[in-house]
Image 1 (cartoon, rainbow, N blue to C red):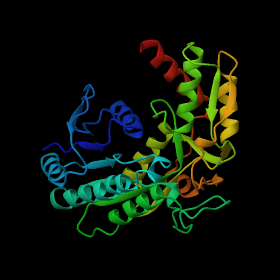
Image 2: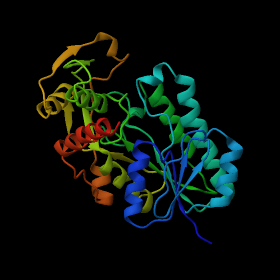
Image 3: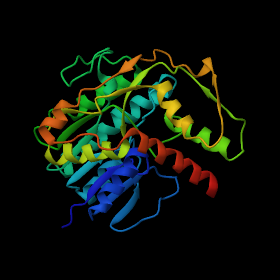
Length: 313
């Protein structure tokens, strides 16, 4: 019997890049997407299924049939800022959805290995680089939902084997424009195409963020799942921080036309952390991972992604 690799949230940002990685290795993959949405095209050894992670029976039945060997749980609410207004939905998706998946695997595929992507925002705010032993005191509804998601995955003596990643900020092509960096890139591409005035509205440009290319991030996910220790958290980060304003400057330097920056106070987030800085030593020393893609390449690829989207729209 074949035991495929399952990617939940496979049509999303990290999930889609994970599919690219697995496809390049010839893996037999099943991707879950939200029911009712257009089914993405199948390719190679990829099959799609519409499964609602909040539908306990649907998750149970799908797992019983698939009996996957590896599971990458990329389905979830991912936007930190939006979680302040959608707290119930964020908690339901990240916590209850993970519970349904782990419970179904315990019953039907207890030997499966599961990658549970948490978040750096489970940590207490700090001005120092945060290692995995840093206190777990979330400062936002999103961080709280991810900490609860972690706890659901812990301590399963009867399976499945849950592997824990704590990604810091990651960005790149295909990211939703509701996230700042992708939003900047889309606005720049829209201005270049002559579809909007040559100004870019921004919120707080002072925060420092530890940024990693999404393609490096999903490579870390695979290493953690296949080689990491179950229930042992691994930070996924570059170990370097950049100010949001400096990141925007790098993007504006690549714009094809002059663009004016306009501060919009409505774009400020409540309780926006001044710095989120990770320590990647555990992932580097135990599994040999380091961030390999320069931030300049990520910016170039992200801008080209939006330019191409507008050309074909």
